[in-house]
Each structure stands twice: as structure tokens, then as C-alpha cells.
Length: 334
Ligand SMILES: [Zn+2]
Image 1: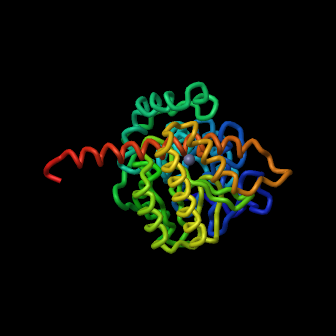
Image 2: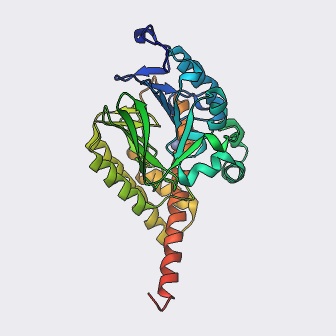
Image 3: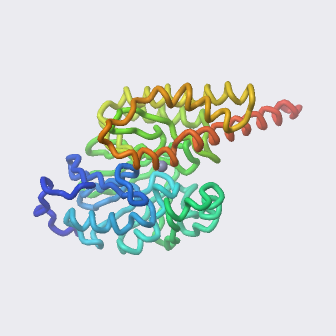
């Protein structure tokens, strides 16, 4: 049972912890030491739950924040990740060790990688090279017995009739899901809508290889629209009230990036050319950061979901699509 936490003075929380009402707190996970890149959320209900854990290096940050918010480590009932990319789930094994009673909830397509991260880590090493250790660190395995995987939909009991309901939401990744708080109507979107910049209000897609799939993304956007959420909780970065508008914006940005890459793909077909076109026609439209803003977080976000990563994910998808079409054309049964 949960210990008393009424003594937490939410008016005097340290920087990096933001109260969002209804016992929800956004916690900056300080990816690689940078503020404003990856947010976790604590729902401090009767059965407290953390959504997203960030990287291995974020585990002590979250441990301190959760304690600061009046919980003992034993109180945390659930840790859930929207998907298993390292900026969201890299710290899962460390977190499981720090919070001994927490059940770890993940989509079924990601579960085995949390229990045995070796394949995930070797493919991440191919993508990130030298930057892997600096940005993400290493994912430690999570004891399989503590992992609960969910399929198309699932439920996390927050206590007192409050739940988080998961919805399978592929497109950004095959192991991605969104989560709805039944008390507040908040929707935890992971990376399905892309990256929201709270300083400018811009939304940019997040379309990395190898899973990005435009059609799946669009279906997920429709699903999220139908949920009729009262607020969108972005992992990158923060809570957004303008729900329908932001989902529409996410869709038009996604289509524009894909169209631009498709055009370039049709002419020259090389990655550098497509990245240059995207920078020129798409990225140049975004509002500049306010002058006093730290450029560091923006630079790190650009690495996670910037032109290079996004364009190569879109090109990868276009190639896959072309292969599928060729295979279908060559198959007399189709
Ligand atoms: Zn991410």
C-alpha cells in the first residue's frame, strides 16, 4: 500500500519536475545530461506508475525524482514504456533493480528485447557507432518474470478505479503503443506523433529505420484522433492541450517529409541529396528557437529525430514498398 505523500510541496519542486494536475508529474530524464529531450511521467496514484524510463543514465535521475515526490522505491507498482528504443527504454533493467516491486509493461513485440537486450544493443551499435555510449549507454536485461507484455490493447491498474489503457500504435516502431489515462483522458503518445518542441510549438515527424511505415503511422494518427484525448503527453517533449490541432499538424508534417523524400528518391536516390532537400524545403520552415534557449537540447533532438535519421527511415520504407510491389507483380497469384 502506498505511503503518505501529502507532505510533498509541489510549489517547490526542483527544476526538471513539472506538476501536471491529478497527481501527474513530468520528470525530465536528462538524456546524456541534456534537459528538455526525453520526458518521463509519474502518475502518483494509489498504484503509482512511471511512463517511460529514458536511458540507463536516467535511472538515478528518476530514482531521485520519485523519492522527492514522496514515494519509497517499493511503492512504485508499474513501469511502462511506449516502445523499446533506447531513449525511452534503455534504462529498464536498471529501473527494475531500483524499484523492486514494479511490474514492467511493454508491447509484446518488444518484451523479449527487454529480457535479452543483446540483439537490440548490437543493432543500435550499428546505427549509432561511437555515439551509442555517449547518448544512451547500455541496456541491462530485465528479469523475464517481471515483464508483462500486452497485445492490441491492455490495462494497467493505477488503483482507485483509475487505469492506463494501452493501444497498439505502430508506424514509428513495430513495438510501439499509446496509453490513455481513464481518469484524465491524457494520451501518452510516445513517438507516434513525432517530436513536439515546446519552445516553438513545432511538431516534426520521427521516422527512423528500420520500422517506419507511413500507412501504419497514419492509421495510428487516426486511432489517436478517435480517442478524443484531453491532452497529449509527448516523450519529446511535454504536455500539449491543443489535441486535434496537434494531431492534424503531425499528419501534415509527416506527409510533407515523405513527399519530399519521395520526390528526391525518384530523381537521384541518394541519402545526402534527400537530406539536403528536406533541410531546404521542410526544416527551413520551422520557427527558430528563442535566442535565450539552450541550443544543446535541440541539437540532441536533431540527432534522435532529425533529417538524417528521418530521411533514412523514409527511404528504407520506400525501398521496402518497391520490393513488395515488385514481388507482388511477379507473383501470378496476385
Ligand atoms: Zn524517442
